[in-house]
Image (cartoon, rainbow, N blue to C red; front, side):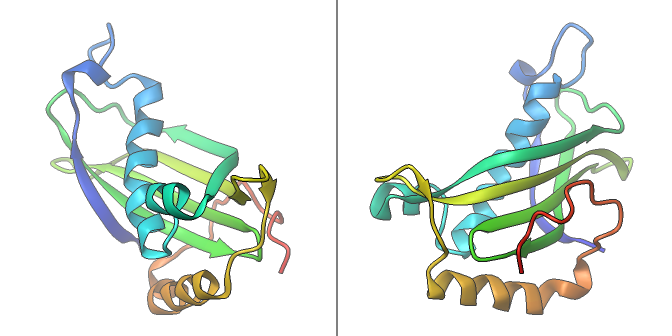
Amino acid sequence: MSLHIANQIIKKEWTDYNNHMNMAYYVLVFDRLWEIVLAKFKMGEVSAKTTQMSTMVVETHTTYNNEVKEGEEVEVNLIFFDHDKKRLHFKMEMIEKSSKKLSATLEMLSLYIDLNKRKVSEFEEEKVKLMDEFINLNKSNFNNNNLVIMGKLKK
């Protein structure tokens, strides 16, 4: 199961001499679409600019399962999400829309950061509540099978 985040058309400038999307752009697509989820928790770019609180990635695991080419459309889905007082752990998948083939996955661990101090900080109560409500609403869509980054949350 999964939770659809958004779709993305593969741009020409993201392709390489092998005539498919270059590996770096898979991460770019995941990162850009992850901002949609962060906005639900009042985090991300707006929060960084207005409150000086943000997230920073400390660990990732990416799989490249099937190539995607210029002009193809991919669906990006959230397949796992959890948190503790200072960390976010999530996994997304990229599905090539017409073939329904798994193109890539990205699993990530992020820390919540006070940008003024450049130090790890605990989530505000409001953000914890938003994340917990999101998890409770969507937990039937999440799957913790095949997670590589395990045991990093301190619950």
